[in-house]
Length: 237
Image (tube, rainbow, N blue to C red; front, side, top):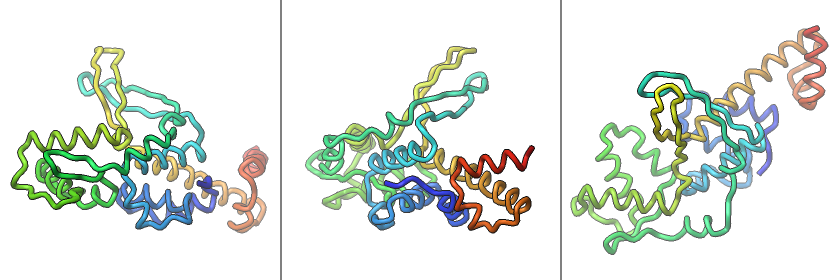
C-alpha cells in the first residue's frame, strides 16, 4: 500500500465528492492499491476493507485519530481520541477467519462485503434489509421464508464474531450526565472527511503560490509538503 500524494488527494476529491461513502472508501483504496481492481476490493469482507482503510489513514495522516460526538441524553459535545495503529493491526489468523464460512442450522454464509452493503443501502426497513443481506451472503441460497427473527439475529451475531472489524464500536461516557453508550465509527466516512479537508488545503496552497510566484499547479504539486509549507510561510509573512 502506498501513501497518497497531493495529486491523489485532489483527484480523489474531484472524482468522489458525490459518491456514496461505500464507493468513496473503495475509491481511496484503489488509489493506494493500484494493482488491485475495484471489483476485487468491492468483494473484500468489511473487516478486511476497514483494516485497509485504517492503514491508509495511518500512512496519510498519522496515528492520532480525533473526532467528536454529542451525548444523546444531555447533548454535551464530547471529543474522543484513539490510536489509529490499533485499527490497522492485522494478523494472519484474522485473515484466515475471514475466508471461513459461517454455518447456522446447516446453512453456510460468507461474510458481507461492500458490494453486499451497497445492495441494501436504499432499504428503509431494517428487517427487510437483514433478510436481503442474509440472502446475498448465503452460499447455498437459503430461502428467506424459512428463517425467523431469532435466526436472523444468530446469523448476524456469528458474522460479527467472525469479523469484529466489520463494525468499529467505541465505548463513550458523558462527563456531565455519566451516560455511557456505544457509537459506531465509520472509518470510510472519517477518512473521506480528512481527504476532503486535505484537498481543499492543497488547492489553497496552489492558489497562493501560483499567485505569488506564477507557478503552474503541476509545479506547485511537484514540491514536497515540507518545502511547500516553507514557501507558504514566506508568502503569508
